[in-house]
Image 1 (cartoon, rainbow, N blue to C red):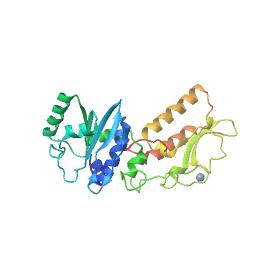
Image 2: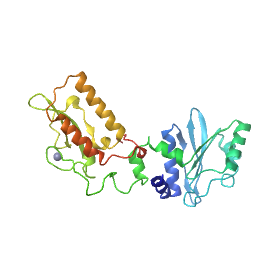
Image 3: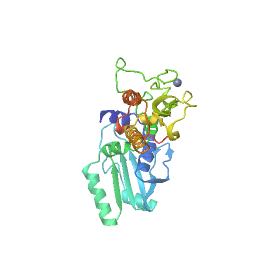
Image 4: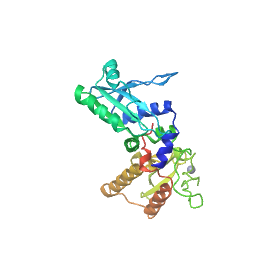
Length: 267
Ligand SMILES: [Zn+2]
């Protein structure tokens, strides 16, 4: 949790509100009125889900550690009326007090309003479904890509053509892996820079971006797909096929992201 605490801590109030828009979209809330930033800081904004409109209130108290209480969320009922909406969302970087919880329960029971609170624990779970690039843009890690091993343990993964390390930060977005047909009509597992592999005939023209491979789920999907091709399409494999595939998987693992750090959408 500590990494995420720091991640949240480093966001300004304004960033916290922009972050809220992304997080809520992942779970189906579409923004209708975006947060407006005035001299007095952020304002409430509106989202819609299943034909129900919600007023979103963001509070970013993580640096003081203070829970969000009734004094911080005044006149919720009036605010819902004013915006003519049926739901309330609290997007908070700390927990809420029982006082506020009871108050929200009361409002919703009596007036058929709905509410949902997004606190850090819930937000971290949703982050698994977010685009890693977006999380990076909010400062999830200072380096561009994640590194699981120490510098001295790190083993480069060399492009099969030019020998460049395709796992270096600047080469990752520009490298791929795939199944290539060799002169003997057998398939080999290859990886390398996009320009180096431009003229290589890849099976079904399919390839895995190294950026995708850094996400455990994508890598699993890719491995499954390859196994299916080999089995169902009866591919003839070169003798070093599995050695190369293993080498690739082992190399990539050094830079694979924790699953909490989002997924790949190729945006
Ligand atoms: Zn190369």
